[in-house]
Length: 490
Ligand SMILES: Cc1ncc(COP(=O)(O)O)c(C=O)c1O
Image (cartoon, rainbow, N blue to C red; front, side, top):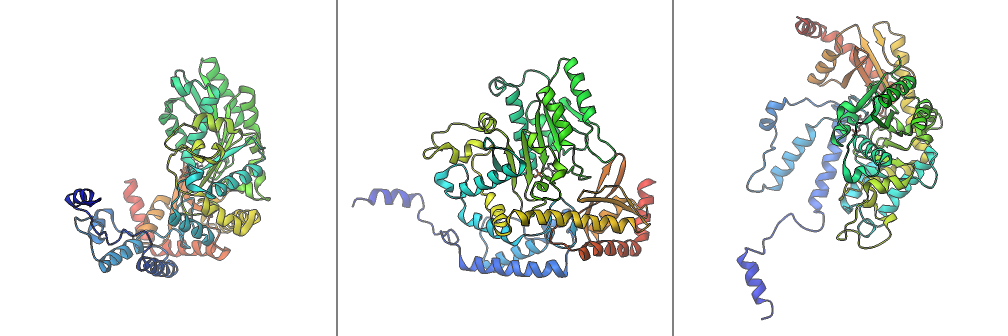
């Protein structure tokens, strides 16, 4: 009779219920379906690189998205799932140039899929085990390539926005460690170029620094921060009784792909004791390339650095490497005691002590599997290839008189206009007619198509094919493009 009371209580609560899908093992049917969906998707990506977009107002009519009270049978489930997957934009196809990520790296996918199966959280060694070593090795090797010494440390973050946030927090605490306790009580000033990523202003707002305390430093004709303007702005703020503390320099600006001159900027930072962060979310991966690492000359002088592996290195979203030159600051700003969490092992292996997150997916494994399989040289070759593809595109544009080029050499953003047609019209119609996914950008009052060559799986032919597709599309749709243009200016 020992368990009879417990069983009765459990039965009164309606237990045990049999959940048909909640088994500890992965169901064979689901694995088979996964494989079959992926195989079909890979074929479709070749035959139909751009999906027909479903108008958002029709979305819930066209797809079986509604969640219901009762579960559904496997046939309907798989059918609904396939419809959903096959109607989703194809970011790994040969005609996706819309964002700063594209393509698919098989070894990185393998790592990511395994990290999902293992489902560790990276906060403690007890729970993540050797995966901690995977992350530490990526951080160690990246810090070494930057030119940092043993004092450096870092973490894998979800992306550039979060990395930029962490850097700003560390810069704030390095300026005055009491702010962690007392809050921001003076006008603390952030400097960044007028072409920086929007996360800088947003982060200043989230941190209580305030967007009005962000100074937009002028850029030259190629989109690079002008260090003399930075210095002038810092000096003016000091005269006004403000507290400059943080400079963000960008390695690959979001639209033009420009590289701020780190060496020159670092001199201003040193003189005024400002934290220098390098936002390399887009193109910081040049550190892996012998040929292009000179674009971030002086990076070793910065206090922190980040690179998104999910951009130029082609890992699945999300994977970003954040490195601090001195791990003291990483710990000072981010570590927190929690007796319910940190119960074993040395804190150097309990990565939650240097992370903004608590529970954290293992985003390191996908970069490690890629890096391990192709080596640092392979990563560098991927980067070199993207610059080569951009050269191919620029060469094509320069030798065809209907194009006007706006961007410069040493950038994987190739910005241009075609036949003087409104770039917003072209990009939108290309999307609506499911031809090509590409976006537009603006620099110094000029708007243009921003063609991004970050898909290292592409070849010269794929780049030339993009222009061929674009030209025939414009020819076939010229009336629509011009009619719409006239309508928009009317
Ligand atoms: C220069 C730069 N910094 C930061 C970011 C933000 O990165 P994430 O999208 O990973 O947050 C981007 C994104 O495009 C970027 O171009």
